Length: 355
Ligand code: COI
Image 1 (cartoon, rainbow, N blue to C red):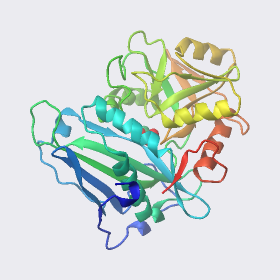
Image 2 (tube, helix red, strand yellow; image 1 turned 90 degrees about the vertical axis):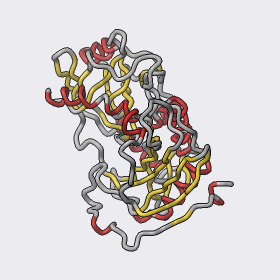
Image 3 (cartoon, rainbow, N blue to C red; image 1 turned 45 degrees about the vertical axis):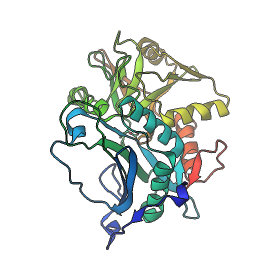
Image 4 (cartoon, rainbow, N blue to C red; image 1 turned 120 degrees about the horizontal axis):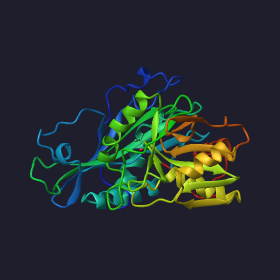
């Protein structure tokens, strides 16, 4: 069985909803394309592979995922090249990370041909939904959750794997104001911080709400032990340009292995820019800010792409960040990534895959 010979049933919508969407004013996460890919894990194997109209699910109130959180996901994006062909960005990296999350959460792996076959067929089916306006893309959400109707605490025997998509615009409409969090934590060593599991996001909401009440948009998490080192931000990895070097926390047990992050690191190497992946102390960042040595601090992620921070709040002081100029690393790397993803420039890394 390969991606192209994967047996799946395809049930198409009778009437597309695409005309209901204002493609010139896309917001993040509000519109969903016509179809979704669905597969069930039953009796130790993936079965019922289908593309069906995007619709509500019917679940038992005892569905295990709703109680004990065996739920993981990925965030990916598709673009179109000038010939109108759907392009995926590093999909196998998302597939590999998805299966790492699955292993950590005691869930079954999704074989490559099911992940890639379902994704490819879905993108071909809903290709018309891939936007081409600036800063827009088709967001792709693969996810898996446990479906046993059983409330004893144990790994479920059954699971659902779904991929749906939706056209999106920018995640942040203006540079986010971020606060260095020194009380609450996102992840501790030995925990599930490196897994893209639903609970990591659920647990972040309360501290994020408190920060929002203080006028911030997002949190920069620090390490659970000392709150001295930068980890990641709510929906993204964090990166700094200090003294002409790209500096970012090394990924670990507590930090998500971000695909946009890794791509930016690779591009910086490709441009012969010094790169340091290591522990990054909050003090080092604040000192560099105070001394005018910090050129940029930004979030990197599929949803946010490259999002320069407007303000970093630390111990009650708001530090304004320098405005991003056209020739700066943050803006050049964002443009280069966009050009690679949309097929406008040659992809020297082999990251782009046609659907
Ligand atoms: C992504 O960048 O795709 C993510 O998964 C973040 C999401 C929670 C908005």
